[in-house]
Length: 217
Image (cartoon, rainbow, N blue to C red; front, side, top):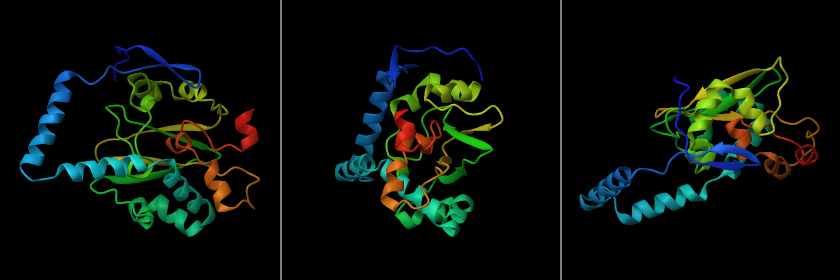
């Protein structure tokens, strides 16, 4: 992969500068509109189908992913299924990843995982909803592979030198979800308390799950 990239204007994410991709071209917008109108005209889908699909996607967010993560934290048998048969495990939450496949990767004391899509913005939308803007930007897509530790540091995630970083490149057929490490000291926490800890960024792998006192530090 070439290291030469054209970047658009810079914007900030949590106080850090991140390059923004250019807006979709006029040609791409015209093509999307033409295909959508043709599908409606041919009766393949209706405008109402598209509206409901958009609303369903917009309604999804990190809360659904948090429920999956906490179920894995608190149920060893479910965790085993989630890591070894991810598609089947998430169906219990009403999620059908087909025609894509889902792969859940676990953060441990030895390994930290993070997710990227180097070609575009492939993302586990049925679980996490719409991806954040920075996930789609060209500088994140390039730098996550080239210098993942530097990117993690910009998100406030400092890893010890001995911890391995694995970067997972999503594609049209395969989506990744990170199972973050459960913080120590939460053994007696309720499910609701645990779910409140899990963030979207921790399920992409750019941050860890932190206790409130750690997050404020």
